[in-house]
Length: 142
Image (cartoon, rainbow, N blue to C red):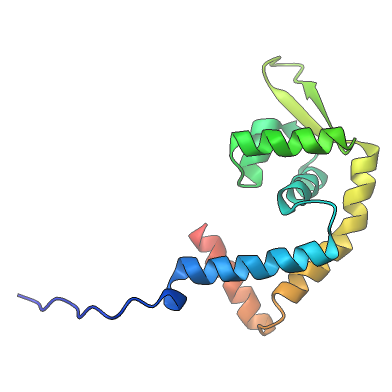
């Protein structure tokens, strides 16, 4: 019978969830320094709409990895700021289609250079090869 592996002491700073949370907190702090008037989910919503065009509210939630209740709140706040519009789908009246307004398009286009800077600063402790590998590994986990 094989021997059971020896259990080592549990060290929080060696646990994947803890390390990911610390990295996420660092990224969110950097994001807030560059973009203070939108939350990361609000920016992600605008950026994804800019990338894919008008899409259903549910599909948008899937595209930015956000649950249905959260994406509704994000869209409601962006709509109140006149950055997106909501309309019933012509083919399925139960479906809501989200689109950027002209102001929303201008806003996201002005923020995209800042978003690139946020990514660069977030990844700055890593070499280019390390950053590329990290992104591939995280994508594999997600």
